[in-house]
Image (cartoon, rainbow, N blue to C red; front, side):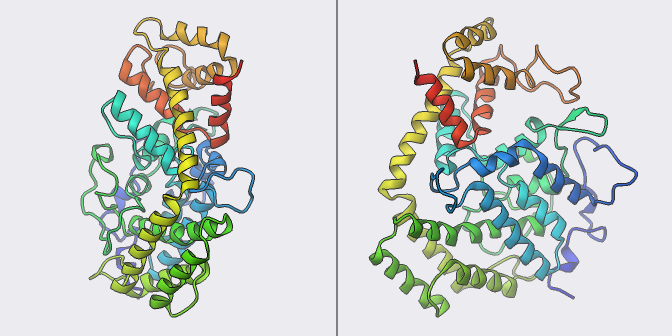
Length: 399
């Protein structure tokens, strides 16, 4: 028997009914051969938020290069790594794959810098933080729509286990020895990224795979872009050789991390690395933070991202008026037709007065409420690709 097969998501697991529970029942097909989690997987990859990931920054903003990792490549790396680990440990690969492919659906444009800008705005205007893990949950529950078999538009209506995996996937959290929590609970009651552990072992695997996937690829991209010079590379090589006994590249690093995790994870230790490999990961994270994420080239790009997002938010939010918000947005179209028209078209799907009558999901934004309108603007910006955000900014500043 494999190490954790007794704890895998399956009918034998006492958590099973909660794992496959949905907030709203998903329509059924008599000839559907998919499991509940595979239905989640296909719903995630067919939604528009997934498509936009190919044009969202992972770490390095490089829209002209086909060889720098984008957000969608990162998601596919997490899917590949997490499924390898789950299969080795005897866990449910269908659940693992579904969490992995959907885990960053709520990520902002311009990577974590975009997320930080939206967080700062949200705290200033609403008083609540913005974090992409919780936004991923909000996106699949309320924003993303797919047509059902009768052409009615519905939200993704994912299972609890997948929704839980989205909000609890924080790969920036440095914990080792992950055990799934016992109680299901209200996912929207979670207030801080990385604090709550996932409800399933599969969710714990995705959380670790998120760490594995970005740490080496960020180094690889930094080398390709010339951010790491010979001296820093020599320091990195020496650091990694001490732990792996080999010259460093992403292939060696990923193989070492996956093998170590599979070797040391079990019911007594949870999903974990050995102490030495966990130390290596922490050292690499500090190295990346010092020489990559805080490099002048990255910081200069970050300043531009802040300008773009702030300008978009400020202009749209300036239209708020308890009684005349819609009229103000219509006036904005005279100066910025593409920008304002796009927001109005998006907003019409979700607000209280102009909505598609075929929609079954309730309205979620109110143009007459300041906080609700601010959330609408933040949600709209968070869904943008890098290029679209820049197009909106250029429409704002152009004459």
